[in-house]
Image (cartoon, helix red, strand yellow):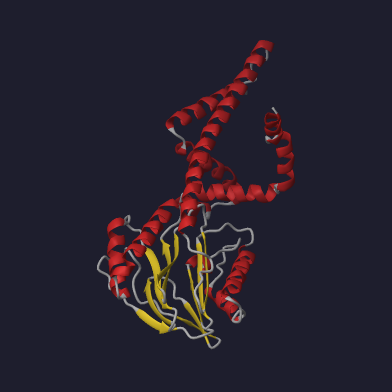
Length: 371
């Protein structure tokens, strides 16, 4: 009995929840943000281009019509029929030509039925969304389980790994694998697009790399095999960039395969150098030729690998974070540990983006030799 009372008191209350919502929500900012998201999702690229040629007066009327039309066609056939019925009932309830008492009551009842139909459609759409959200959350949990530790324990090395999807699941690859006592490998990749399709391909790419890495002595052959598998199993017009490196923890020798990814930044003697791209991205050319690069990382030298979600992060007016800003920030954090430098980058990106929506997945790997 006491458990029943406790459960009752712990249930959310409509009045209290509404009061909390009023205190938490900034109506103007939230309305503007939600309206912007509606336009981004429902309007086609063609319509977005047409809006650029319209004056504000015309936009005021045409945008709601386009949104309603797009919303209508995204409903299931049954829900579209319900929506039409509800609209007809609303129109009938607004007919003021007959004002007898009985007719007024009927019109009110008609309006209530229309409102209940709208609520029913809303409940069905919310149910679908919650189902999808549950599945995405489960997918996100799997992704998190596949992710490496943020700070792998490697003697003589200071390594920091970070990834964050733009949505519930993402298409960036980040992996760490210990191949032997003195050899570890790090993979950073970026599957074209974002969301569930990119996440599934990312998981496929990660599992492929883990499965075949021990069988290859050269990264050129490894890249060739990964590319053939990706071309075979991926969808048309989808590709992925990849940086795969093998690090000898004793000597500091690093073997690198860069398949169309952004050039890593090497910090050496307080100078920054970009390691050039040498091979095409995965999934574009089935018979592409891949190359292996080698370098030695000396004590106090740092290698930074990142996805384009870093330099192409956008603020509210559409400006990019840019490589120039990143390089300036790195020059100010040369003596920091990998973790502190990574946190400094994240804080600067957060300040730059401010209230803007995140557009792309973000992945960073910082590798510093300390001995």
